[in-house]
Image (cartoon, rainbow, N blue to C red):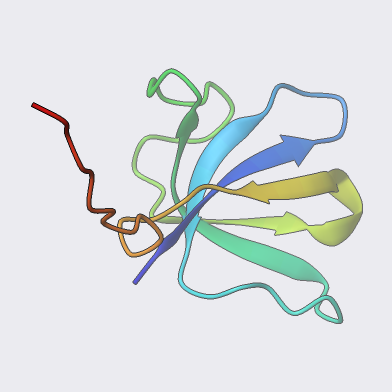
Length: 81
């Protein structure tokens, strides 16, 4: 299961990417796949043929995780007729 995140890169616009697992804070870099702009378009500074992108931790301000399909719970709704 991949985790979709918003990557806030220092000095740049936020972009979207997927991760296989939450990153280790002790590692030097974070690995992302399917990196794209927030509107779904390709990121201009990443080659279209790239399958993985490694960002060093010191270039990332913070990461936001987006809810996956598993995070959405089904709620029973009651309607009054």
